[in-house]
Amino acid sequence: MAILNGKYTYICTYEDHRDPKSHKSTRLSTTVGKIVGGGAEGEITWYPEFMKAHPELREVRSFRKIRDSRQGRNSYIIEHEVAA
Image 1 (tube, rainbow, N blue to C red):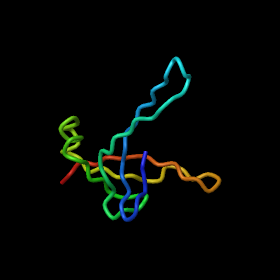
Image 2: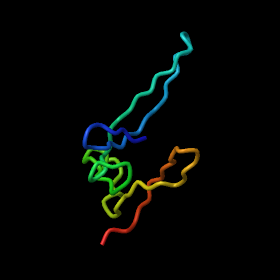
Image 3: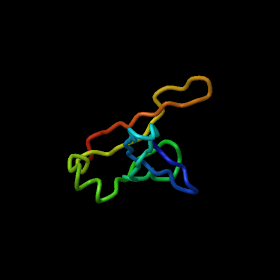
Image 4: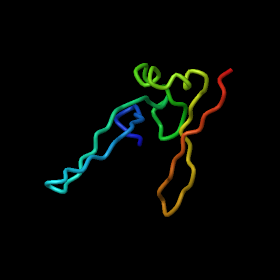
């Protein structure tokens, strides 16, 4: 999930939790990086805390790109390429 906030676009992970008593669900999100340049697409800079949990990201460059565009809504994908 990406959140546009001012001049930055933040990349977040999230987990949905459902309360069995109230039957309501809540979403817990964690910001894990941001897009360089702040647009909806571009290279992602991962936060150090997320890199500690996912050291494989040190060896790649990550990009958020449009996967599909239907009815005026874009669907995005994160792609990785080997860092030079």
